[in-house]
Length: 398
Image (cartoon, rainbow, N blue to C red; front, side, top):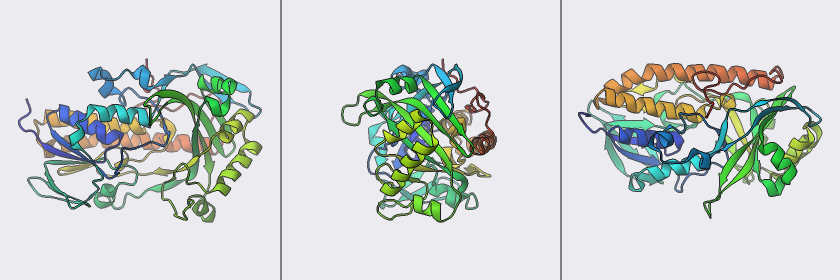
């Protein structure tokens, strides 16, 4: 039995923050979540390759049928320039979407402890706790502050000011399409596989995901796609990430906000450079969006009574499909450390930090290497994908 019930504030209410909130609550903490967005989060159709730890809360508590929140594919395929399949192997992965997982986790947490529109702007700690201030003027006192505020973490900037986001030299055009936008034949073909096309200076992939309709709550399958393209820092990149309103975006340009001339150029490039089926995928996407690819590493994750988890600590390129899994693992290991320390927050964070730093460093190194080989054309056609958290292949789902 825990000796105390640490009052805990989680800064950020996305997947990592919610997983931390749930596991810490179940470990005996009193947990409040503060999310800066005024409305429930929407993942813009973003796809997620599942890892067992990403859905561990659902499976261990028998809360959500994973088969209803994810889809399978039979094949990992490599497509040639003409649209032919040049390599094909059985697929061991399951695919989901941000929206499906977010809603499932949110439904598990206490609604009156999940506070939207509350941006934490400052915090100071002493020997006994952490004083937290929100932009709204709300003040909070906690025994533990868990910072899960994502890739552009304000907590990271405060705690590790030298750990800056480093642009990796390429971006991802992204989007989702459904059967009506593709036609049944092409949709069925792509729905059955995660499909890669390797190019001399980038790569394209598609995979199926379940998309939750915001109005009805119904789930229907879609095809999620990404086209990773090399664009160096400079005027071309600056122009590309300037949205329809003339605002230069730091990390992404949302669906509907990409300038029309950039979307037109995307379609022209797709027709000229991609296999015909993949060019059709881009043509069928009404609102593609742009994600910049970054690296970021911290040298510390624990600071007395404050810690960084998930993308607030390490930002890794997507090629290991481990971002959501890393955030979830940080949360699970933290809750285990709190229990083992009998609620002693400082002792728990001290014992927790080393393992999570090592894991973040390993994932970051593996994704950097995979990104280099994908983007310079040296990734071998037919090679096993680098999906995994601790090791390649541990993303396999039964």
